[in-house]
Length: 234
Image (cartoon, rainbow, N blue to C red):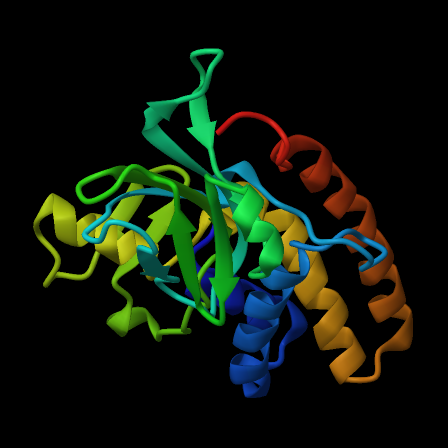
Protein backbone atom coordinates (compact mmCIF):
# COMPACT_ATOMS: atom_id res chain seq x y z
CA UNK A 1 0.00 0.00 0.00
CA UNK A 2 1.26 3.46 -0.91
CA UNK A 3 0.30 7.09 -0.82
CA UNK A 4 0.80 8.92 -4.10
CA UNK A 5 4.00 10.62 -2.92
CA UNK A 6 5.42 7.42 -1.44
CA UNK A 7 4.85 5.56 -4.70
CA UNK A 8 6.58 8.35 -6.62
CA UNK A 9 9.55 8.14 -4.24
CA UNK A 10 9.68 4.37 -4.63
CA UNK A 11 9.79 4.54 -8.44
CA UNK A 12 12.30 7.40 -8.38
CA UNK A 13 14.59 5.36 -6.12
CA UNK A 14 14.20 2.21 -8.20
CA UNK A 15 14.84 3.88 -11.54
CA UNK A 16 17.42 6.31 -10.13
CA UNK A 17 15.76 9.20 -11.91
CA UNK A 18 15.22 12.01 -9.37
CA UNK A 19 15.07 14.38 -12.33
CA UNK A 20 11.75 12.83 -13.36
CA UNK A 21 9.77 13.41 -10.14
CA UNK A 22 7.16 15.60 -11.85
CA UNK A 23 6.81 13.20 -14.77
CA UNK A 24 6.51 10.16 -12.50
CA UNK A 25 3.85 11.89 -10.40
CA UNK A 26 1.91 12.51 -13.60
CA UNK A 27 2.43 8.89 -14.68
CA UNK A 28 0.91 7.66 -11.41
CA UNK A 29 -2.28 9.65 -12.02
CA UNK A 30 -2.30 8.62 -15.66
CA UNK A 31 -1.98 4.94 -14.76
CA UNK A 32 -4.79 5.15 -12.20
CA UNK A 33 -7.08 6.64 -14.85
CA UNK A 34 -5.83 4.11 -17.42
CA UNK A 35 -6.96 1.26 -15.15
CA UNK A 36 -10.54 2.40 -15.70
CA UNK A 37 -10.54 1.05 -19.21
CA UNK A 38 -10.30 -2.51 -20.46
CA UNK A 39 -6.81 -3.71 -21.35
CA UNK A 40 -7.55 -3.35 -25.06
CA UNK A 41 -8.78 0.24 -24.38
CA UNK A 42 -12.07 -0.53 -26.07
CA UNK A 43 -14.43 -0.19 -23.12
CA UNK A 44 -14.80 1.76 -19.89
CA UNK A 45 -14.60 -0.13 -16.61
CA UNK A 46 -16.67 0.68 -13.54
CA UNK A 47 -15.48 -0.21 -10.04
CA UNK A 48 -17.50 -0.71 -6.87
CA UNK A 49 -15.21 1.61 -4.91
CA UNK A 50 -15.93 4.44 -7.35
CA UNK A 51 -19.67 4.31 -6.80
CA UNK A 52 -21.20 7.32 -5.05
CA UNK A 53 -24.76 8.07 -4.02
CA UNK A 54 -26.42 11.33 -3.13
CA UNK A 55 -29.97 11.92 -1.94
CA UNK A 56 -31.49 15.09 -3.36
CA UNK A 57 -34.66 16.93 -2.33
CA UNK A 58 -36.66 18.59 -5.10
CA UNK A 59 -37.49 22.27 -4.62
CA UNK A 60 -39.65 22.61 -7.73
CA UNK A 61 -42.77 20.77 -8.86
CA UNK A 62 -41.13 19.37 -11.99
CA UNK A 63 -37.83 19.74 -13.83
CA UNK A 64 -35.56 19.71 -10.78
CA UNK A 65 -31.89 19.87 -11.86
CA UNK A 66 -28.66 18.66 -10.32
CA UNK A 67 -25.18 19.74 -11.44
CA UNK A 68 -22.39 17.15 -11.49
CA UNK A 69 -20.28 17.90 -8.37
CA UNK A 70 -16.89 17.47 -10.05
CA UNK A 71 -17.04 17.18 -13.86
CA UNK A 72 -13.32 16.32 -14.07
CA UNK A 73 -13.84 13.05 -12.20
CA UNK A 74 -17.41 12.16 -13.20
CA UNK A 75 -17.47 8.87 -15.11
CA UNK A 76 -21.04 7.64 -15.57
CA UNK A 77 -24.54 7.96 -14.17
CA UNK A 78 -25.46 4.56 -12.73
CA UNK A 79 -29.13 5.07 -11.94
CA UNK A 80 -31.81 7.32 -10.51
CA UNK A 81 -34.68 6.21 -8.30
CA UNK A 82 -37.57 8.02 -6.70
CA UNK A 83 -37.69 6.30 -3.28
CA UNK A 84 -41.10 7.66 -2.26
CA UNK A 85 -42.83 6.38 -5.41
CA UNK A 86 -43.93 2.82 -6.18
CA UNK A 87 -45.17 1.17 -9.35
CA UNK A 88 -48.20 -1.09 -9.74
CA UNK A 89 -46.13 -4.06 -8.53
CA UNK A 90 -45.14 -2.29 -5.34
CA UNK A 91 -41.53 -1.70 -6.44
CA UNK A 92 -39.69 1.59 -6.02
CA UNK A 93 -39.74 3.64 -9.21
CA UNK A 94 -36.52 3.83 -11.19
CA UNK A 95 -36.36 6.73 -13.62
CA UNK A 96 -35.42 6.08 -17.24
CA UNK A 97 -32.47 7.92 -18.75
CA UNK A 98 -33.38 9.48 -22.06
CA UNK A 99 -32.82 12.50 -24.29
CA UNK A 100 -35.22 15.41 -24.83
CA UNK A 101 -37.72 14.97 -27.63
CA UNK A 102 -41.36 14.32 -28.52
CA UNK A 103 -41.13 10.83 -27.04
CA UNK A 104 -41.15 12.41 -23.57
CA UNK A 105 -44.91 12.80 -23.98
CA UNK A 106 -45.15 9.06 -23.37
CA UNK A 107 -42.84 9.00 -20.32
CA UNK A 108 -43.59 9.89 -16.71
CA UNK A 109 -40.48 9.00 -14.70
CA UNK A 110 -37.30 10.01 -16.51
CA UNK A 111 -34.15 12.09 -16.45
CA UNK A 112 -31.73 13.44 -19.04
CA UNK A 113 -28.38 15.22 -19.23
CA UNK A 114 -27.79 18.74 -20.48
CA UNK A 115 -24.10 19.55 -20.45
CA UNK A 116 -22.92 19.06 -16.87
CA UNK A 117 -26.45 19.10 -15.43
CA UNK A 118 -29.12 16.42 -15.05
CA UNK A 119 -32.85 17.22 -15.15
CA UNK A 120 -35.47 14.98 -13.52
CA UNK A 121 -39.18 14.52 -14.08
CA UNK A 122 -41.97 12.53 -12.45
CA UNK A 123 -40.36 12.39 -9.00
CA UNK A 124 -43.41 13.49 -7.02
CA UNK A 125 -43.25 17.27 -6.71
CA UNK A 126 -41.74 19.71 -4.22
CA UNK A 127 -40.02 17.99 -1.28
CA UNK A 128 -39.74 14.64 -3.08
CA UNK A 129 -36.54 12.61 -2.71
CA UNK A 130 -34.36 11.75 -5.69
CA UNK A 131 -31.61 9.17 -5.15
CA UNK A 132 -28.76 9.54 -7.62
CA UNK A 133 -26.04 6.92 -8.04
CA UNK A 134 -22.98 7.51 -10.19
CA UNK A 135 -19.41 6.42 -10.77
CA UNK A 136 -16.47 8.82 -10.42
CA UNK A 137 -12.79 8.45 -11.18
CA UNK A 138 -10.36 8.88 -8.26
CA UNK A 139 -9.15 12.45 -7.93
CA UNK A 140 -5.71 13.21 -9.34
CA UNK A 141 -3.19 13.54 -6.51
CA UNK A 142 -0.22 15.86 -6.05
CA UNK A 143 3.33 14.92 -5.14
CA UNK A 144 4.54 16.39 -1.87
CA UNK A 145 8.02 16.32 -0.36
CA UNK A 146 8.32 14.34 2.88
CA UNK A 147 8.11 17.34 5.20
CA UNK A 148 4.98 18.65 3.50
CA UNK A 149 2.94 15.44 3.34
CA UNK A 150 -0.43 15.37 5.02
CA UNK A 151 -0.23 11.61 5.58
CA UNK A 152 2.02 8.61 5.04
CA UNK A 153 1.44 4.89 5.48
CA UNK A 154 3.73 2.20 6.88
CA UNK A 155 2.52 -1.44 6.69
CA UNK A 156 3.93 -2.12 10.18
CA UNK A 157 2.93 1.02 12.05
CA UNK A 158 -0.03 2.27 10.03
CA UNK A 159 -0.80 5.92 9.31
CA UNK A 160 1.23 8.91 10.41
CA UNK A 161 0.16 12.51 9.87
CA UNK A 162 1.63 15.95 9.58
CA UNK A 163 1.96 17.61 12.98
CA UNK A 164 -0.79 20.10 12.09
CA UNK A 165 -3.35 17.31 11.62
CA UNK A 166 -5.01 16.28 14.88
CA UNK A 167 -8.75 15.61 14.58
CA UNK A 168 -10.26 12.48 13.06
CA UNK A 169 -11.97 14.61 10.41
CA UNK A 170 -8.67 16.19 9.41
CA UNK A 171 -7.00 12.76 9.31
CA UNK A 172 -9.66 11.44 6.98
CA UNK A 173 -9.25 14.48 4.74
CA UNK A 174 -5.48 13.97 4.78
CA UNK A 175 -5.86 10.39 3.57
CA UNK A 176 -8.17 11.49 0.77
CA UNK A 177 -5.62 13.94 -0.63
CA UNK A 178 -2.77 11.45 -0.21
CA UNK A 179 -4.00 8.17 -1.68
CA UNK A 180 -6.91 6.30 -3.22
CA UNK A 181 -8.25 2.75 -3.16
CA UNK A 182 -6.17 1.67 -6.19
CA UNK A 183 -2.93 2.79 -4.55
CA UNK A 184 -4.04 1.14 -1.31
CA UNK A 185 -5.04 -2.26 -2.68
CA UNK A 186 -3.49 -2.47 -6.14
CA UNK A 187 -0.24 -0.54 -5.89
CA UNK A 188 1.58 -3.36 -7.70
CA UNK A 189 -0.57 -2.79 -10.78
CA UNK A 190 -0.09 0.98 -10.72
CA UNK A 191 3.64 0.65 -10.04
CA UNK A 192 4.17 -1.61 -13.04
CA UNK A 193 2.23 0.75 -15.28
CA UNK A 194 4.37 3.64 -14.09
CA UNK A 195 7.59 1.66 -14.65
CA UNK A 196 6.55 0.99 -18.24
CA UNK A 197 6.05 4.70 -18.82
CA UNK A 198 9.33 5.70 -17.17
CA UNK A 199 11.35 3.16 -19.14
CA UNK A 200 9.68 4.29 -22.35
CA UNK A 201 10.50 7.89 -21.41
CA UNK A 202 14.21 7.08 -21.03
CA UNK A 203 14.25 4.85 -24.17
CA UNK A 204 14.89 1.63 -22.25
CA UNK A 205 12.86 -0.36 -24.76
CA UNK A 206 13.40 -3.84 -23.34
CA UNK A 207 12.41 -2.92 -19.79
CA UNK A 208 9.48 -0.85 -21.07
CA UNK A 209 8.19 -3.82 -23.05
CA UNK A 210 8.55 -6.23 -20.12
CA UNK A 211 6.90 -3.86 -17.65
CA UNK A 212 4.02 -3.13 -19.99
CA UNK A 213 3.41 -6.84 -20.54
CA UNK A 214 3.34 -7.51 -16.78
CA UNK A 215 1.18 -4.44 -16.25
CA UNK A 216 -1.39 -5.85 -18.67
CA UNK A 217 -1.43 -9.19 -16.86
CA UNK A 218 -1.84 -7.58 -13.45
CA UNK A 219 -4.68 -5.38 -14.70
CA UNK A 220 -6.65 -8.50 -15.55
CA UNK A 221 -6.60 -9.47 -11.88
CA UNK A 222 -7.76 -5.99 -10.92
CA UNK A 223 -10.64 -6.13 -13.38
CA UNK A 224 -11.69 -9.60 -12.30
CA UNK A 225 -11.70 -8.67 -8.62
CA UNK A 226 -13.09 -5.16 -8.49
CA UNK A 227 -15.47 -4.52 -11.40
CA UNK A 228 -18.99 -3.49 -10.41
CA UNK A 229 -22.16 -5.10 -11.75
CA UNK A 230 -23.44 -1.97 -13.45
CA UNK A 231 -26.69 -3.62 -14.46
CA UNK A 232 -27.44 -4.86 -10.95
CA UNK A 233 -29.28 -3.16 -8.11
CA UNK A 234 -27.86 -0.06 -6.49
